[in-house]
Amino acid sequence: MRKVSVFGATGSIGQNTLDLIARAPDGYDVVALTGGRNVAQLARDARAVGADIAVTAYEEELPVLRDALAGSGIAAAAGEAALIEAADRPADWIMSAIVGAAGLAPGFRALRHGTTLALANKESLVTAGPLLLAEGRAHGATILPVDSEHSAVFQALVGEDMAAVERIIITASGGGLRDWPVEALPDATVADAGAHPNWDMGQRITIDSASMFNKAMELIETKEFFGVRPDQIEAVVHPQSIIHALVGFRDGALMAHLGAPDMRHAIGYALHWPDRRHLPVARINLAELATLEFLAPCDTRYPALGIARAVMETGGRAGAVFNAAKEIALDGFLARRIGFMDMAGVVEATLDGISGRFRLTDAIDTLETVLETDHLARVEAEEQVKKMQGRK
Ligand code: NDP
Image (cartoon, rainbow, N blue to C red; front, side, top):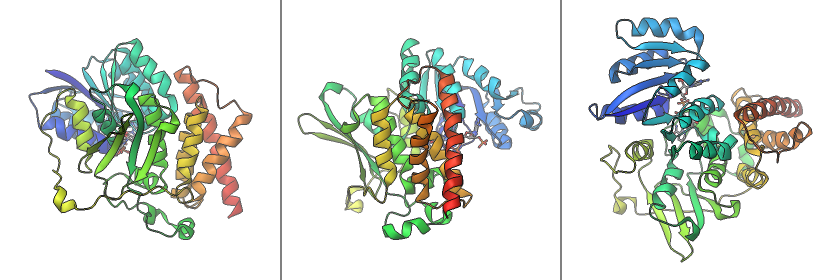
């Protein structure tokens, strides 16, 4: 039986992963499930799938987790070290779906054991792409993309020669504010930006979708994961979210990946890879769809895309600074300290301001450098939020 672990099991990706695992109870031996504050859910899931161990990231939650698992025979543990120990437990397949920089260390650790890592945690590639891929190569591990766009590209590339790839196009729904006049965007509220037309996701990623900071992250992920040049990557607005990505080849052919907007497709593909198995996702009826639209993204409406291009060109530590700054900018927007369009201003000012502390082009060569860069960028970005707030 395949041994699997799910990091970030209580989140949106984690729950979808467990849904697929639970549909084939004889196929998987669940080793570790990890979560954060939602220990009740973590304990319920650990019992339901018969995990060996459940780990919460927070030490203070351990007594509650222990109580909830009492009598089950499932071990309980807590804290960062326990997450690393969970990544040391032998597993054939590990889902990396912890949100944020906290997901980096367990993912890196899992690669050391030559496992197959299904990578949902965007921050790993954006902040430390070259390092992560090198770690995977050094230990003979396999990294599979879980973001729907990158899974789509990965699927379109099966059996293809990368040398024949001319361009990669990832699609974007355009987010909840797609049809707003550009002049009205500075006044968009958290509620306005937090409503997504197609995907059912958490509040932060939904707002990142409206600002296209999510797509900006995905441009950087594309460059890192597939090893293409920034000028080979395009983003296009596709309001229906049916085509997730396209790969253009040197003979002019475009291979598109179509699928219902349901993360279980990309998760299921990674879970069963290299096989394709039945997945409980909606089937597309092309005649009912009738129209698929594509629009070039407007730079004024989506400044995040231009910033991502500059970050890709710079390389080095720029991705880690970008990621940290966009997190702090989003916190500022959620706390109503800055406006919707100020988020891009904060990220740009952080990338400019941080160059006094280190060179953006300096290589990311250890996990410690990533975490140090993340910390310094957060401090700088917080300064920029304060300045922006002062100007309001
Ligand atoms: P959620 O916020 O729904 O879940 C995050 C998970 O991480 C939860 O299990 C949470 O625990 C846990 N967690 C939170 N903080 C910590 C911490 N400090 N240490 C350890 N664990 C922690 O996120 P999503 O599932 O939406 O996303 C997970 C990752 O996948 C992100 O990087 C995201 O960008 C990426 N992604 C998400 C997509 C989506 O459709 N949602 C699509 C593609 C990529 P708890 O809830 O118990 O506190």
